Length: 316
Image (tube, rainbow, N blue to C red; front, side):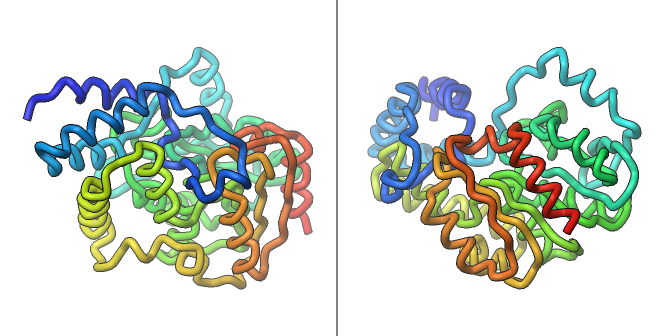
């Protein structure tokens, strides 16, 4: 089916890069209101109309967007940043290799970015961690940052962490942001061994993410149902297990609630609900918690006080 809305799909993706990690309507009272770009609203309206004629095609476009990585053109400083690393190591994944950049000496701390993010978002962590006596490994997940490709999925993140453990060495701590938190918690179920993990603004519930996505687009129930079916099929192929959708909940991903760790979140987070943060805090019985105000979802990664508190936790 040929349809002019395909260009609209691409345009909306550019306008709204964080579409995979929005917030549910039910949580509006507990997060900062987010302005929805008009192209994204039009996208939902257009796909709803198309679904009246061809529901399968409309759902397929949504499924494609779900696994599409939004990448900005790298700024000039990015190449310089990576070139400043003490060492560059290529790690081999099942179908590709990606570079991992290392600084410093000591226990290994891996920094894991979120969906459509980049390891460069952790640039403020590196000098503080190396000064504190840690070896730091930073990378862009497959199809992210400067790596080739347009599409990715959770196992690309998870397999990267396991590969670092196997090919670089034992990992003391993973510090993960947003979607990266889902990756590290899943990785602990797939062979990743950690002393502790630090989850910054995490979302560990795929149903909340999906509901946020579909509610924002105001999709027809029939289209939502087909869209979820297609994603479930992809999950089954990727994970090679039945009922994989149910795996992505706080209780299942934090299966070992006694895993030592630190939860960091902000009261003004515009992408993840306070209700979800509270759910993680309640279930994760062996976690310490840092709560901030006014930093939102991303500025946590730049705040020197937050970075200092995280390092103080690691030194305990």
